[in-house]
Length: 199
Image (cartoon, rainbow, N blue to C red; front, side):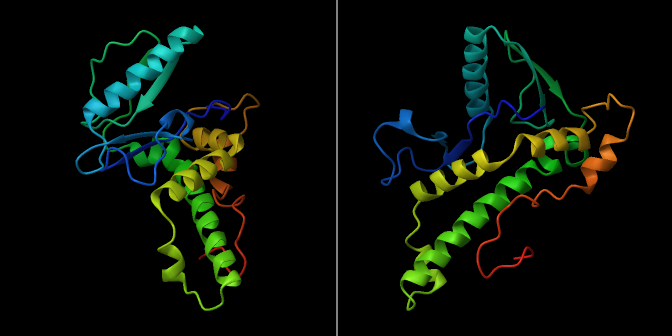
C-alpha cells in the first residue's frame, strides 16, 4: 500500500513468441504469456497467483491481496502466503486503488514516452509523419516503454490511491481522502515538447 513493492507487469498477447521478442524471456522487463484473444483467463490468473505465492513462501512473507469480484478471479484457490479478499460487486471504480489513479498515471507516462519518441523521430526526419513513425514501433518497443512507464509510477502515487480507496486511516485524524482526491494522477508525468496536458 505504500508503493514500495511493485510487482513486474504482466502482459498478455495472442502470439506465444512474437518475432521481435528475444529468445530468453528471463531478461524481459515484464511477464508475458499468450492466450487466443489476448485476454486474462482464470487459468492464467491462477498460474500467476501460485507463482507469486511460491515466491512469497521463499521470502517468508504473507500478504493480503484485494481483487475485483469477477469471473477471472476464482474463489477457493489454495494459497499459503496470499490471503485473497474480494471487493464488493460493482464497487471496483470507487474502491480499487489501481482505478483511483495508478493506471491513469502509468498510461500517462507511457503516452509521454511514445509522444517523445515520435517528436524525436520527426525532428530527425522532417519529412516523416506521425503515422510513418508509429509503424516503426514494434511490440518489443512497447514492452520496454510500458515497463519504463511502470517504473516511473512513484510510491506516493500508489499510496495516495490506496488512501482514495479508503484503505488507509490517517494517524493524525486528518482527512486523507480529501488530500488524495485533490491530487491529479498526471501531475508528475513529463509533457513532451509541443504538447499540452490535455493532449
